[in-house]
Length: 339
Ligand SMILES: [Zn+2]
Image 1 (cartoon, rainbow, N blue to C red):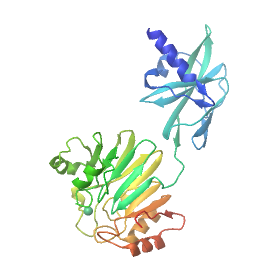
Image 2: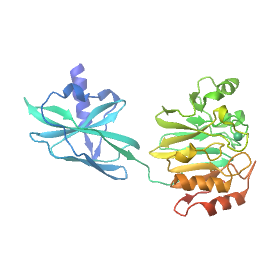
Image 3: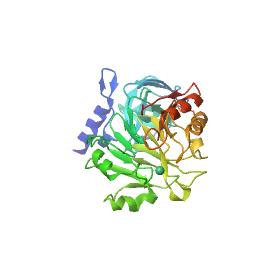
Image 4: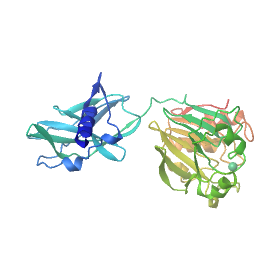
């Protein structure tokens, strides 16, 4: 019974559909270590070339190898992907995000391949073709990002209708324009996951949310398959958002694209070291950095695209957007979502 299940799993692992490699499912895992009984060297010089969601991995020949086995990382361990006779493999339509691979030489014993020592792993990031079409900002800092299989929202506010589409809702802090029960009710689903600063635990419990995933100011962890990194958000020359409150911005990686949602903050040492593809920064001034300061932050962290937020309703105006645009380096795309 057990044997048959494993045989089926191995067959599934090497099936090809018109050049598309079928990735084995969770229950078909093959652990490398248990097979690594041989004496051949591990393949070296792994290289990868990437074109969209297609990659080619190559490695140098191992003396004595009769074939090679490629492994990929799934659900916490390396699993067999495919055997090849050559020293390279092409893989198509890979899922978005970080992909990890190893290769081992194979020797034939009693008509069966036996895997030798596996190579060092090679990592490749498969990113969605870059654009910002999947993003909306309906007002203030109320942001919606649609990934290929997830919808995340930040600080929902003045939501029209009842989209109830959020898989994850992130809160940066508890001010009314960032943490609004009426708007939470408009975007949440029965299984929505909430992410918030640790210091908001009581506020969340007051509105019946007892199972939020809470972040300290320098914490990073995975939430529903999405890498989330907290970045502290605070004022440096005003007192609306004091550092001791533990309020946050976030860097989230969706489909291989890193989004920085700054929250209500001034330019801080922590914000200046963020690495991201898209940065949402407040530009309205008064309670946060102003347009010129925001542009300076953007020029320091150099995202592909900058999306100004926190202006045009409660604070700041369209002219702040023009100021922001005029100071941002021309190599960085400024995308206006509010106007
Ligand atoms: Zn605020």
